[in-house]
Length: 434
Image (tube, rainbow, N blue to C red; front, top):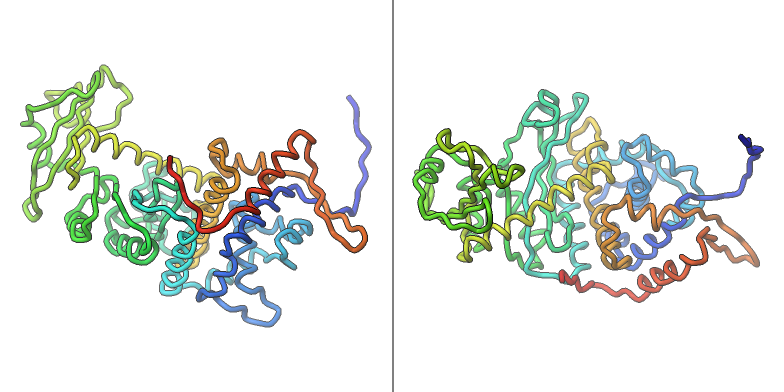
């Protein structure tokens, strides 16, 4: 066993030299300049941090691995990374807390609807598929808005129950609201949809709306129909729906163990709509999702969807199935972006940080598409490993400062190619979904 001799150096080094790629890309988007146009809190003194510095530092902390406010202190001593992002100083944990506590419901609405609209102006894509979903974020304290509600993983624990809207084609977050943990899945959904469609995505065309059974209620269906939007929504199998399904006989076999059927149905206070029912034989599809509905037919699981689209029933089901990608986005947000960990006692402060995390996520998604141009970079964790986590230091010679990145010779051409791609990029980006 060999013990290496230990010594110390004052040389300024960063483990994240590859973040210079992201810095140049963000500069090209102009999104930092857009922050100056928003209703952001002003510092309380001449020595306070300006809002752009706080937000950039918060994003930078997330991108380099922070999942709690205390982690954000790590980067305060990384002088090279501060130089890369042109930041003289980076805030402490208490600064973030004071900053986000200056947000309230009205400010959140003004800031994030405009910021998200500015972001999506960077992308040229239309006929969007919007997937609405909700998730549960467990809380281990008495933070404002945390309450006992539906929590499948930590039953009885306090939680928040946020609403989220995803864009299927770009794998980005269109909008999000934080809600108390005891909020029903469909609560406030119409207002949330209105903000998403008429504010954030007002310059985009919506082609399809999908949602799970938590969004199955008459108010939401009627709103989507009034907006003339196509939709496919999973339904709750209420007793009257269950009774109708039991009497169906015109099943069509799609593949081994999967049968499809459709029916017209209306609730007492609703209108007649088209329903698609999927029946899966457990013996053939033991892992298939769905509910056991009938005691005298224990070998089948059922799923049910309501839609205003006139396509064949098999296409309707296939179109809805791709919505499962929402769960991957939520998983990445929790694992790589600290979505379930950045929390303050004040509810609207927590929502502000929550929504800034979504913008950080979208910027990485756009960077992966526009700069890396490769599907192998599926998550932020992968991007950090291959692109960002590169040792680097500053070198000054003849009054010229250079960033020296430690990189094997065989990877330098690849890195240069990314720099060139970013340099040549112009906005809005044509977002191909092929």
